[in-house]
Each structure stands twice: as C-alpha cells, then as structure tokens.
Image (cartoon, rainbow, N blue to C red; front, side, top):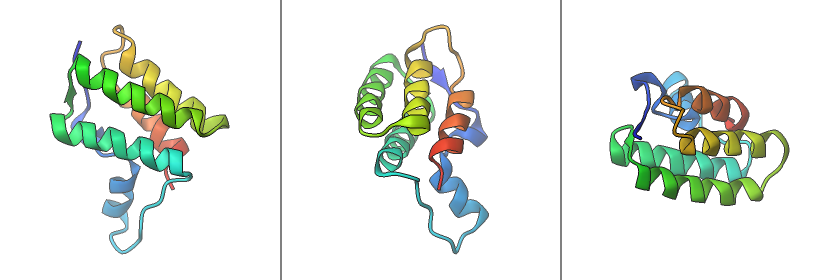
Length: 106
C-alpha cells in the first residue's frame, strides 16, 4: 500500500520553521529526533510524498533505530510514526507526521 502525504504536510518541522521564520535556524529537540526528521524528509523528497512498500520498510527500520536511542515522548512519537508507516490499514501519514512534528520539532 502506498502512503500519501497531504501537500502541506510533506515537509517536516525543520522546513516549516524555516518557512515561518526565514532568519531563524531550525533545530530538533534531540539528535534522534533530528535524524528521524531527516530520514522522513529525505524519503518524502525522493518519492514525491508517495512511499512504496520498500521505502516504507527502509524508513521504518531506520526510525526504529533512532527511537531506541531516545526515550519518553520522543521515542513514542518516532515509534508512532513507524506504526503508521507499517500498518496497512493506515492510508494517511498526516496524523503521525503532526505528532512527530509536535514532539520532535525545535
């Protein structure tokens, strides 16, 4: 199953912060969050926001590793994104993306 992003939700927090405040640098709350956001953004940019099963699996694998390197709410948000990414009953990643942005955004 392909996972789709709404056009406005494809860019994760780092880009959104830059669009809102162009002169301000964007930071994630932790190195694990920064890497998780970078992996998601790279996957979205490479696929145009339409992730096939192989891409979903690769992204999920990387995100699981980053989740293990953090804890608490950040770990839960990253693993929540992995769950949405790998659950065939989920057709939109927008809610998981919003939660990842809320928790991991700087």
